[in-house]
Length: 130
Image (tube, rainbow, N blue to C red; front, side, top):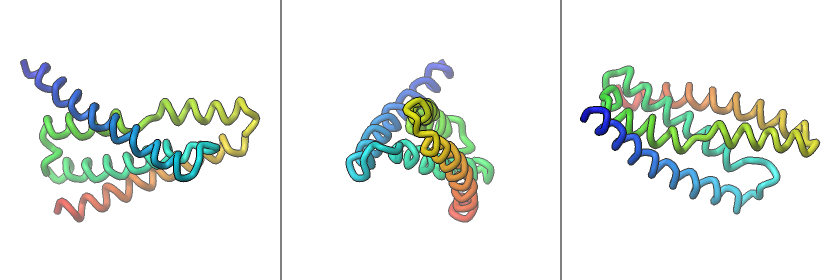
């Protein structure tokens, strides 16, 4: 029964994460175009920031140290919201289309910005949840 309860929380978070990703990536694409995968980058960087904040809460024995909130928010919502698979496919597509500088830019920017965002989120979370 405990496993079923966990699955329910992950599934519920995934529904909301998928909807948020669909909406925000579409919003960004409509605003700046789809020549470069800005929508996916915004999703992944904002997701990295959020997971940093939630990890800080968990580290400080806050709300997200508990299993169910973590399952809902991190495993479910952020697991469905962020997307390494789309990032990978878009980078490959840029490279296959002969856009190697853009593929490299996507790779470097995504990795750098996501690492900075998770560190900033963790730092912000330490202060917010202290």
